Length: 208
Ligand code: ATP
Figure (cartoon, protein in one colour):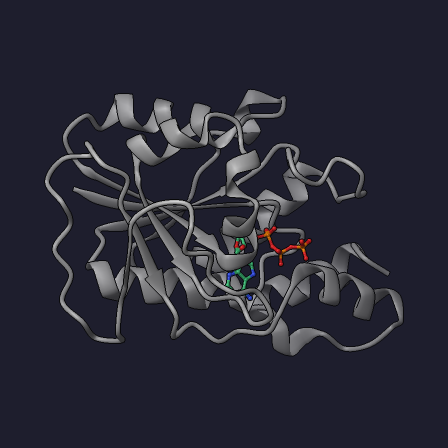
């Protein structure tokens, strides 16, 4: 079993998340991609966000008709802030032998050493860093491998050394912040999110 995990605030989920997950899924031939909405975001405590339950619902709507994509309630069920190291430890204990990949954008990888127990995170899962326009890939943190689109990848058998894969070909200049701001200005941001998510945002007037 090979599972990729994309954690995030998903406030709201957008086409950049979906495109990143699709690229990883295709490149690594994953069996499943688990989207893990945070109950609250460790890195974004200062920002307001809509409830975990609305954010979870939007992710569920976005992935419901995509083969292999799942929404995971592992963090929202905790009803308190969870760190990635805790989530991956829990996932690893449920799946001791499979391959676990953790997806993050170049923006998050730039500050990765500030994450709780980031070295343990690297021992629990292969890191897959996807390019995010405007944020460069850092080369100083760990040995890495830059992948080309369509390249065949062999994962190292053991997690003994950190393995980091960089996918430079993801090009999605969209962010949840830009969507929230557009909604507040009364603009149409429907092109940036799956149609069912836009209907949900409009129906619940989440960001207006
Ligand atoms: P915000 O604008 O509120 O900070 P966001 O758009 O960064 O939100 P998150 O839910 O915080 O969305 O992101 C979850 C994960 O997805 C992070 O690892 C982030 O780097 C990655 N990600 C988000 N948007 C993109 C994108 N456009 N391209 C590649 N990766 C992305």
